[in-house]
Image (cartoon, rainbow, N blue to C red; front, side, top):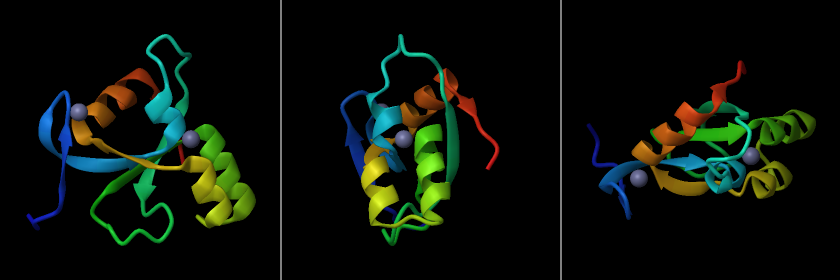
Length: 98
Ligand SMILES: [Zn+2]
Ligand SMILES: [Zn+2]
């Protein structure tokens, strides 16, 4: 294990973190499940070991733009959240095929 940085989650304490698009982070429990996609490196943040997760509308924007650039990255506006919170988001939604 490398000494990757941690996040202090108000629910889970000191945890590893992931970058997750604003739509998934802001989703409410009562919202309809959506497809999510998982990969590495939204934009040029140099954090290759960090999992990046984004939703269907972000993926549509990504396909439209052809890559993570200013437009697609601004649309996703990825947030740092802990991996346990990410797991909750994953459990609520369904994994899409890249
Ligand atoms: Zn999104
Ligand atoms: Zn958490």
